[in-house]
Image 1 (tube, rainbow, N blue to C red):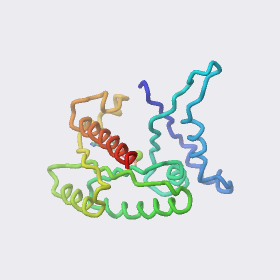
Image 2: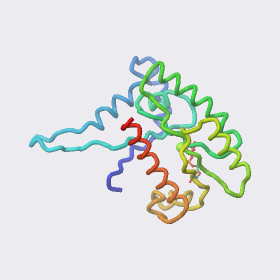
Image 3: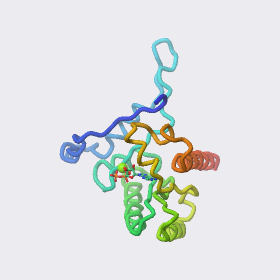
Image 4: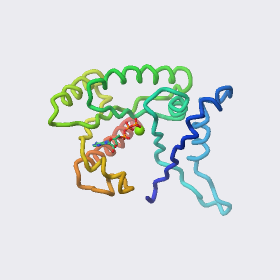
Length: 193
Ligand SMILES: Nc1ncnc2c1ncn2[C@@H]1O[C@H](COP(=O)(O)OP(=O)(O)OP(=O)(O)O)[C@@H](O)[C@H]1O
Ligand SMILES: [Mg+2]
């Protein structure tokens, strides 16, 4: 995909904890690597050889370990996908505590960009209850857009495609497009403030 670069994880990363344990910069390895990456650089003739990335998204495991800490130390903001399931709020409060800790100790500029409700199922009363609870608890931090449970989203990977290329018209793709524009709008508002 033009404009999209992916650095996939490998099983080797599971050994990170051990191999970095005694290093002073263990929490900042990703930040330092990304810092070099995303800076624009000039070719010998003065032209811009690489104009940097608009966004660097770091996909995290659902647990708190050195990988997650590296991600948070390297980031401007955290985007939290939250499934519309019964235990959603439980994990969320733990995550918020962690973000606060990282903010105090490693990355003062870290913010919560927003919470994305996903896997919403209109046939399921519980989904509506979770949406209402999360909105009440987190207020404006919750994006308006809710990503529905949509089989096209789960099919896309087996075709090796992002869902937007697999089926642009499906409700899942449309929701993700709406989310993207909401994210950009939110950033513009923040930058203007
Ligand atoms: N909106 C959706 N509708 C239907 N299926 C979905 C949707 N979003 C994700 N899925 C499917 O649910 C599964 C888990 O999704 P995904 O890997 O994004 O979750 P995750 O929370 O990142 O998981 P992990 O914790 O393992 O990283 C995948 O099979 C994916 O295709
Ligand atoms: Mg995942």
